[in-house]
Length: 75
Ligand SMILES: [Zn+2]
Image 1 (cartoon, rainbow, N blue to C red):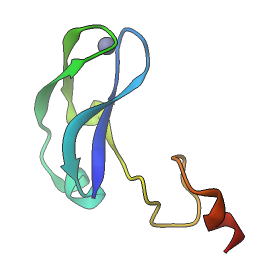
Image 2 (cartoon, rainbow, N blue to C red):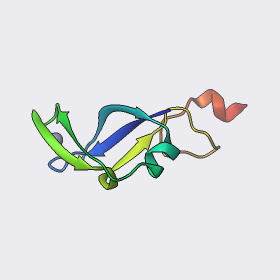
Image 3 (cartoon, protein in one colour):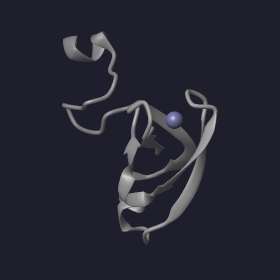
Image 4 (cartoon, rainbow, N blue to C red):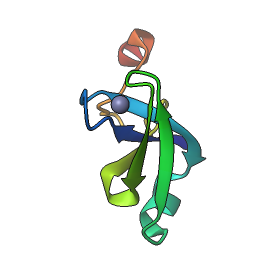
């Protein structure tokens, strides 16, 4: 499971939508539309699935653009 993220159109910051979904399921899901409240802008941004991505805190493979524990590298 991962968190669906979008990019804030005003600040370019990644913000969590609060939606949790599998990456595969997210990809296979039909194009959908949602709204997410952005704390940075204090605005609700509207977004499409094509603008969003799934951020998984636990990388399934060795390399990931996201956060990972330093201890994972030593293992
Ligand atoms: Zn914003």
